[in-house]
Structure formats: C-alpha cells, structure tokens
Image 1 (cartoon, rainbow, N blue to C red):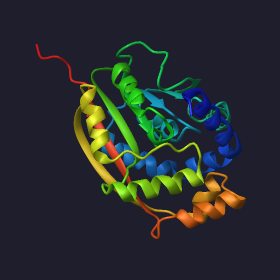
Image 2 (cartoon, rainbow, N blue to C red):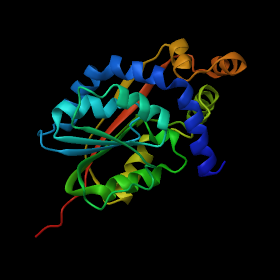
Image 3 (tube, rainbow, N blue to C red):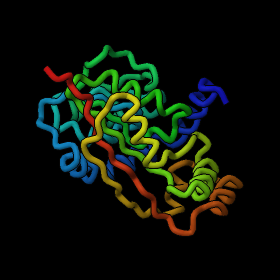
Image 4 (cartoon, rainbow, N blue to C red):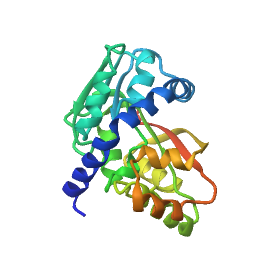
Length: 242
C-alpha cells in the first residue's frame, strides 16, 4: 500500500467514527490533562504543536496549561469534529496537514508532540524527524503511544488483531524503537514511563467502527487479556554549549 493509499484509508476510516472518537476524547480529557501536567510540567507560556490531533485530545487537554496550541491532522472529518467542540479553547488553532511534511519552519515550537499517532503511520520515523525539526533548541518533544511487547511473536499477534479491528493500523513500535528514533534525531530522552490500561473489547471494537465479519475476525484474534502498555517519552532538543 502506498502512502497516498494509506492516507485515503485513514480518511475513510475516521470519517465513519469521528463522532465516537470525539466523545471518547471528551470523556478522557481531564485525566489526560492531569497526566500532562505531571509528566510535561509546562510553565504556562509554551507554544505547542500537536501532530495527529484527531478530534483534539491533546490540544484540548493541554490548552489551559500553555499559551498556544497549533493542532494538525490529515483527516478533515476529525478536524471538523474538533472545531465544533473548540469554543472554550480560544488558544487552539486547527490546521489540515500531513505530519510527515509539516508547513512550519525550524524551531517554531517550545513543545512538539504526538499522541497515539505513530501506529497509524507507514513511516513513523518521518513524524519523529519533523517533531525534532520544528522544536526549538532547548525545546521538548513528547511522544505517547501504545507500545509493542518485547517478544516479537507476541508483537506480531497483537498487530494482527489491531489491523483486523482497524485497517489503518500499521505497526506498534516497541520501546527500544521509539528510543532509537529519538536518538537518531539528536533528541535526548529526559523522562519516560509506561502506563498500563485495561480495555473493554466490545467498546474498543465500537470505537473503530468494526462490525460484521470483520468484528468476528477481530474477536477471534483478540489477546486473552485486554491490558495494553502505553509509553510516554519526553525528550529535549539540546541547545549547543557555549
């Protein structure tokens, strides 16, 4: 599948489920805001970029904690849902853009972030490279995503289930790969943690609009325990020493 074909698949998939994604975002917003406040420790004057914003999960959660948020996504239906719900966040701006080719200059943001996006991208290394490029010297890069098991066979099985549930899924990265991408882009990891989340299988299938034979197949491939590991990574683009 080419990158253009995958982009069209993303747009079709999320056009169907955008409202469900937005409802989930609202239900989890306060908890995500608390997590961001603890992990990122924003000072209040940051300009933040949210790549792969979806319906604004990160953007709305972090907006009261910072000066400005620019949120980008490739899927018009998701952006439309986000804009409909954005009235109480005047410091958030939404823009349709490909996260692998951002329309910003080098070093424009204090924090460049992506949350639960890399596993939807054919080439996640391009996203990380862009996050590094647009963050200022001394600025931060935040990555949050479900991570693959260290056992490669378990990782293959989990990806098979995720693709059956949602064809726009590409691959979960293991912890070691995310760390390697940060290092490859000259970013210094300052903080990391793994958060374990329990999922209700039927609600998780609903969220992806997985129905009919596809739903039956996804159920048959589902892990016996619906507990997933979500990695949080905060890195810095180091400023040169004087």
